[in-house]
Image (cartoon, rainbow, N blue to C red):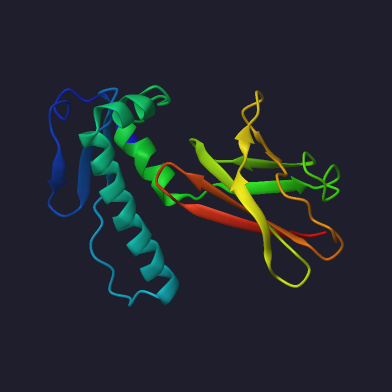
Length: 187
């Protein structure tokens, strides 16, 4: 999209003859772009999924704008022409990511630890761990604690696990819009 410093278009916005669209950015810059119409091609199932996610993101962003505390939280992280609404929409569209689970210090004893790294484009709100025995029974579950580096989460075992080999650790990271990502590791 082209930027314009044209005095004639300075206060204009909207479409011109179904050919051009004039928009304004947050900083006040006027932008010209090709007018887009509805597609004549049927959407694929993947495209329909993205459209549904986009609609949910809009609903979340509108709810953020109605909540002064959440709006202020998002407003502190905006950059450039971005708005708190745009950031909330992006956050709702993208789930957090678990990049690693470190089980080296977990030996099945009470007090042993599991560390994992979870990241998000805005903020990971919580991380929950579930430890399953080799036969699939839940040994224990609970919330991990965010560490000082702001990236790693620490879970401390509260129940003894007699047979660690074959046990499974499941981590679930959740962001503010309640998007969830799950990752399993077999010990």
